[in-house]
Image (cartoon, rainbow, N blue to C red; front, top):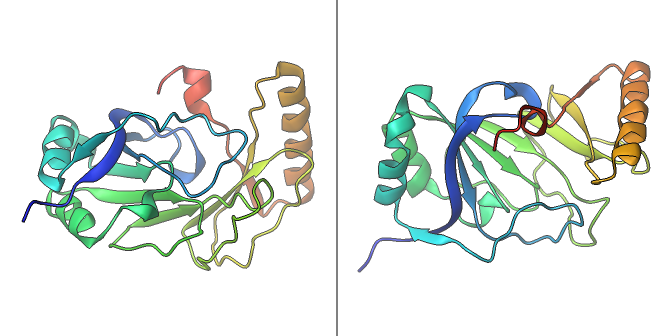
Length: 197
């Protein structure tokens, strides 16, 4: 019987640009495929590589000194399991995951970030009720809420619409909202400012 293969869109080494760990060096494993179709998604899932756990570990070995892996997508909960997370932990990595919260998390994840897409899609109901971090995409029009998720880290991330003037307006509204609701913090997509992947 052949080893399970994961559909991986890309693996790369960069800086985490968003949320609590912004600025930290990280290995990103981007899984192909998602159960949602968000209007602002910037990932092309038509191409992917089928990779075994052994191949994934071998691929990230050159960056082992960072000790930090981010499982993202797409929607990583559609593929990530105990086999993969156990192997990553055995290789010495702390594991973070970025999920839309519509599926249970399988495997031992050290830091879970939920970014609900409920305001933007019809089938984005959040089933996860606990996370290390909640990160909401903020458009200036969508309601800010926690979706019943238990977490101490609340972030608003201004939506990048591709329109400079609109982005500036969303950013101003986001700043004003946070000043009035200081339990929230801002999450800027620093990777875009720094021009890194």
